[in-house]
Length: 315
Image (cartoon, rainbow, N blue to C red):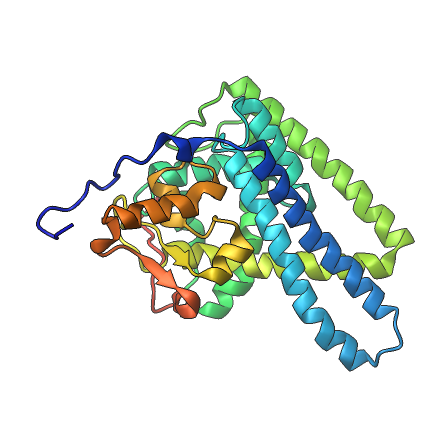
């Protein structure tokens, strides 16, 4: 495809890419739980061993990172749930997402979902709430350490407003009836309450395991805090230019397709586990013969630097 005859900004893709797979969903859930719970259990066992303290610390760090990535995948499951990609019934899809993200305590999924809907409607433009959150951090230490914790506060407030029926200042309403959204928010807080009880129980009965689980949770906040910058820092405006994909075996293995963020913004109705196939299809038809934001391997790390601005035209 020559540059004088480019493909449309959003080429038509095969209908089967939109198809949902219950099996792929369960496999993704199992993969996520295996990573974060398995890493926590192995670290706990390690700390009960006779190894020297320095050896336990060194061996725990990669376990925390692997487990943290398992929780990042849980977050992506919640993300896809509120794009209605996990079940044909929209409400059931949302309920699955709320339960899948329960281990991300104290994260409140529906508070993110409402914000994220507007992010898609106004990506990198006025009205994009992500610009207000992530655009304020302009160095890699602040991006890695502070961006994600701030979202816990913002999304928690959003969810609280939804639960009590208080309006939020977003341009685009979420495409479910307000009463349904309110009930979902209340259910989300019920799940958070259950998780609070579980955390208290673990603290008083299995403190060693809880500390390992906490290490995994902190790692997930560190890892997920990078993703918005990998996906949008230094990008432009408009479909095919406002989002970045990460390509390579590492990303495919640990992100299960959610690393194809450009494709997700082009086709938000395609489940994350079909995004790699979408990328390959677009490559086959010549879409990537034109320049688009795609990073290969570790080159994406550069976008944590403040040299690459997170688009902040939001008000």
